[in-house]
Image (cartoon, rainbow, N blue to C red; front, side):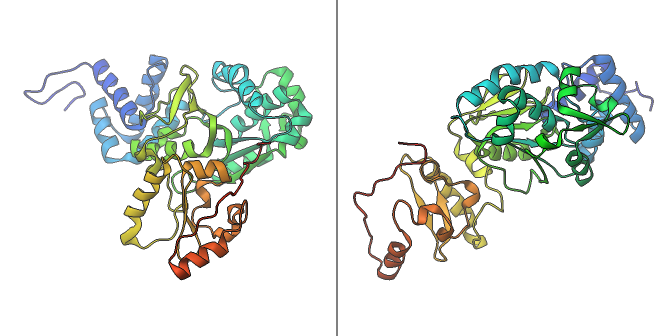
Length: 392
């Protein structure tokens, strides 16, 4: 059968129409919208990948993707070519610098830390781009004192390059000349090395977005051109964890063409064109459940796991602070109000209560818990005063 032949009884469609359906399929299944890309370049790159796998038509390629989901990775790499670069999508970075970073800094008292996470950082260009913008906004001294940028990926080889902060002239070309002179040192001819005194504020490490617990207490989370590699269900789980990772008014910065597939209430668009979203105060019950990774859950018998997760999510929406401890003294529940009041995090679930500040401040709890467990009689502690950190 030639490329243009169709089985009997099937309405013939043009290659252009078939290509549109392929683009719609990519958006529906990976949340990556290529409609804003230059059409001729997009067609050429998709066809290049189709030739590499021996597929002749767009409908056949959709079928191929259905059967071989791993094909999305090389396809997207072929389309994007440069997986990462400095100041990629300059207008989006400009929006971040001019509108978002000032808000983050204004919300922090002088001297308070600024915590950011570049998830899926690859070889580090975007993490260093963020470092440059924050150093410009804060000044180098405050940057060194206050900023922590966690940059993670699953690719150990890319992380090794990111830690070195050394880039060829062609890679550093995306950095404006003035900034390149200020933040990079020339080394070995055409290599540009990010300044070591500022590089100490960046912490690189391996992290699997699917399996590992999210980094917490973040003001800003970058995850650009990474979500597209996951299916819709996994994307929803990752976004739910991002919601818990961010501070109450934190920001999420996605890639140019990425969309939030889950259509939930966890994030609201702050600058949709630049793909900048702000965390909303609450999330749905389903999203709270999705945020729990195996490493974040306390050890439980399999038969009880489902009901325990439901109880935890139900408690999480309550207006009264609540925590729960199991028979082994581990923290198994802490709703959102309790996390806010007592500086607890989802990652604290499963930890021994004795290792947490709430066990002894504002009142020593462990002896009272032991008393309740031994006698079966409830204990009320009246007139306990509690002032959360930062409240005078």
